Image (cartoon, rainbow, N blue to C red; front, top):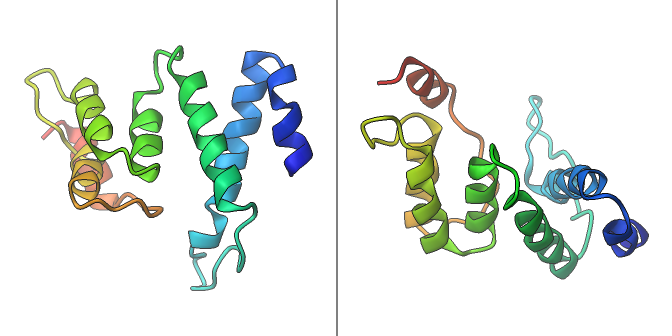
Length: 132
């Protein structure tokens, strides 16, 4: 794991983005509950400092990616940078400036100061797709 992170910056930006996104997902496994109610992983896959460093670098890489605003919102929230997370949500608003679907849930979590891994509700996803 440490070897992958140490050598990540020697990769192409596309490959580094791919690797860091997968490391981010893996670093959340200890918070992820499977369908049968068991935890995906009992212990964190990496030390917290490595997890945060990976998320910060991923955040940097996503700045140049046009369609990555919601991933950036989630990274900022999980890093405890709630005001920045909420401010970035304005780019996820619908054409009349309202947050819908999962974006409402993300804003609520950020306003509550909640950094934990979250599952977006099915109801919120459907509400977001309908544009209500």
